[in-house]
Image 1 (tube, rainbow, N blue to C red):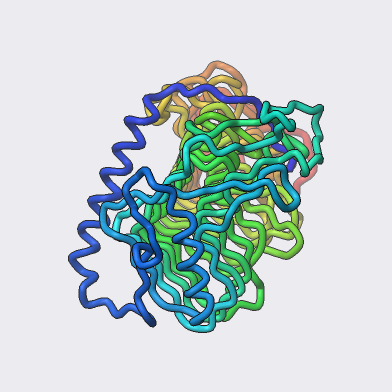
Image 2 (cartoon, one colour):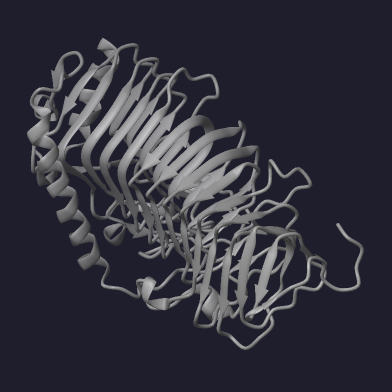
Length: 488
């Protein structure tokens, strides 16, 4: 992944106050859901961590209890794990064994289940044990800083692979109403590892190779040193996955990493403030769609927020990834781009972008190029949690296209009243758009104009094709090629 910005980031907002607000909202949602849950059937036997010795008192380390509970669920092939309402379970243990200097003990680790699984969080919290080590350390326990890239895995300390890991299951999986707190502020941070940053395990939820449906509802996953959620799915799965009201914030590398699979539907989620806590690792995205060894297909995001991440709010730029639709989503880029959708078949409907978009996918095949329908592009710093937007700092276009063939904007509004500029493009498609730019510098939204578009501001349209109606600063533009060029 070629995204930059790997340095330790600064915190520019009242982080814990914002997190408390999210926790209060999370608990209110859980309480409302609890009123409806009494009649919900729960699969298989009900197992509680307290039955295996957990205290849930916010002090005792309950890792062994969760490992024993997981072993029992694996033996019986499914069931319901019920956490105690209001409990805080401290988790995460490290021992000097295995491939690492300090290897993690398993927490909730479930594999190859043949019967339905449900994890009922009931608003409980899993919180990482303070003092766990993360990164590279020498034999004395001091942080070890090697030149990058650093591939000395034997020097790593891993606090946990995942708080909840579910893989190779053939029956439906549900996780609901749980908070997963990576507690990164109280971990001991070692040296970097990997190609850049800290490419070291430490994730809230990992879903891998599950063949049936997966459902996540009301999950708050935050302050993990790696990702809030990682999904490594199969193209051969029989069910879709529904992720509703997932809030993934202040994680070190990604809010969500999608590395393989098909059929994932996200609704009313938030992927924000990645890299805004103690460490930041590239890409530092809200959501990273990055096919690794297997393809990614068929993703939807509805009413989701991608706000103030250290990297792009959304990035899709490597591997065999294609086919994602975003509706009524909000993208806010402060230090870097709000979105980087450089993969085929991405469609945005009714979305708002505050901060620059870069590298929408261009193609001679119009069916593959990125499409924006009924979207808004704005440069109002009031929409940013820290009062700044990336395009304002760069003073560049709100959509920056190195290549723009068939990238389409239909019924879009560009309302740039501060330092932002209209898109930079050459052969994009603009249909029925409204464009306003207050900055006194020439923008270059060049392309093919269909329908009726109005433009206010300083622009250079040389090389454009005017097929429909264009009103430029109150004056109609003649149809045909704009300038001394051949029609195209």
